[in-house]
Length: 116
Image 1: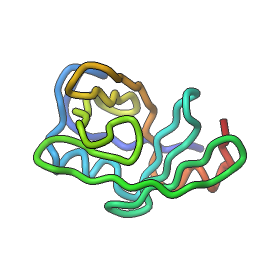
Image 2: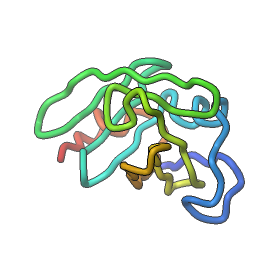
Image 3: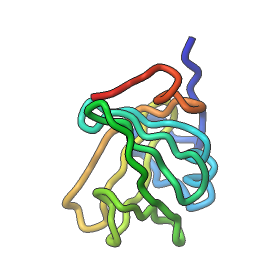
């Protein structure tokens, strides 16, 4: 059985941007999935493992203020993180990227072998 993590009080994905601390608490130790990129496990603050196309690669991420930065699409421009479990959205502050994801407690990627 898959368990989802609840976070900030929002009625649907996109209603309210989470604070930096809420983003950190929501992501650290948990996984996000999307048919666009596969599965990402946020192993610990600053380190994420991307499971895609049958391979695992390490990525970096950080929180600065209320923005999420990564070695991926949010890059050094930063994304706001909106939503409530299980549906969240990464939205780049320049408007050029928006990615809906599902959040799952724990290392769902490795445990369930999800690859895109």
